[in-house]
Length: 404
Image 1 (cartoon, one colour):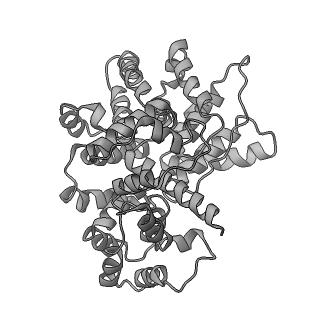
Image 2 (cartoon, rainbow, N blue to C red):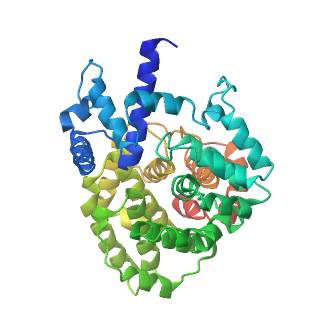
């Protein structure tokens, strides 16, 4: 790889890691200002204009200065951009997504072998050498997928809880939405609560577990929800995923109110108040889980019959501009295609563009249901034959309500 190509690749990797740590994609000047303010909290001074040039918010053919790159990598916990480039080039998880990766380093092989041999002491030793702030997508997916399929899964999870990178990668960046056999929910209760007591982590734990129970069994633990609902929350302090889960659960429990539609519309109005403060990618997630909840409740049709609500949802969908890179994007796309008016023009629905090891059931259910909006026989019959039992078995019956 040439010097220029290698530099460009490392800059792209830096941008990806920055967005993950910031908690939002940098797509607009507003995002640049948010990023600049966040950096200042770590005593790193970069103007919104400089950040905008790096993320191509503004057209600028110049490469960023080394001093700028050094400051940004310092935000990620590195001494300099050069140390970032060296460190991330030897990341254990690189081997999974790059078959040509040289094996002379041996770190990946040592970890994979230790996992297979259930050598938890060795697993912890190797993980302790990894910086949890680098390459924040691929390696957690790799590690989480091994845990999910390991014959000694509980012991594996116990080992991860003893190491910071294990706790961060498994409980915060992998998040097994499929939760086969309830192993992830059990891990949250048995292990994570002892380590993560901040309000954001508690929101994730309670919302994840209660929503899963509702979608799969339609059981409502009202007392746990009421206790949690009474806590004072500052939504501005929460990650967009936490906000999404919070509103999802509020809507699910609204179905038990005397007038669920009235309560639902009030919650939607509250959600729309905070929506403009986030990038479009974040907005998709903030909307996606509440849309899923409304479909499960059987209220999606009535809510989207309100033109203002439908227009707000469609505006977020249109701003996606064909991007479908998350389950959140996939949900918004599905709902909008299901409720598109005859006079509206929308592009053909797309499959998700990223690998997902933690939401396979949701992806299959949503993509299959989306295809039913358009396919003809005999493909239609082939999908219909299996979609209902699959959706019911995996807690994705809400897609069937959208199709009604």
